[in-house]
Length: 231
Ligand SMILES: CC(C)(COP(=O)(O)OP(=O)(O)OC[C@H]1O[C@@H](n2cnc3c(N)ncnc32)[C@H](O)[C@@H]1OP(=O)(O)O)[C@@H](O)C(=O)NCCC(=O)NCCS
Image (cartoon, rainbow, N blue to C red):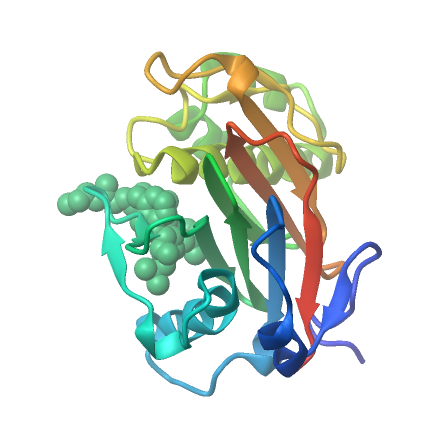
């Protein structure tokens, strides 16, 4: 049986890490990497594991060995590379795997969730979402409402991660069309201080058949290249 996050979804190119290290990556406008949990570095502490993962994936983009990379953190914890001309990046992990989005310009945010996740939809939507979104979810049957909730959540969290604001106080200000399908998120309204809506793009991707993820981008309109780590 295939474990959560194991299967390779359509459109995701398998890449071994040795091959990755040899790639001429710098010209890519937007790369999205899915790293299945089974292949993650065998390090118990989560923060150390994600540090290793980021160094491995980002090093060829910067042109330095993994150990030479230096990171800073914005006020609310968003990490960034301290090297001149380095790409922007963002990471999200969940049961089954981790995703890293790497953007040559602008700002990128990413959020991944397991599609089977059970959720108290009405309670969470009333707490975190815009009134219009909570009301639209209430009109749906339980399963479409759960799917639509997860899709809204990933879009909102990816947007918050692109700005670096954190989610508290910002999830309801990022409003999206309520949609239970795997279409790209459609923005309905956005916070006042994040730039015009025309600067924003959102891509929904399915890295494994068991997950859904959103990449949010400001000032980058290129489509993503999607890669899955094969070991
Ligand atoms: C960013 C945030 C949405 C991540 O939520 P999550 O679902 O737990 O985690 P994900 O797996 O999607 O992402 C975690 C990764 O996002 C990145 N990240 C951390 N803070 C971030 C931020 N503010 N914006 C964007 N990305 C951030 C890091 O790479 C982090 O991995 P790490 O924990 O190994 O450093 C959430 O932690 C948050 O709102 N943080 C802000 C906290 C805050 O405002 N603190 C104020 C300072 S006191």
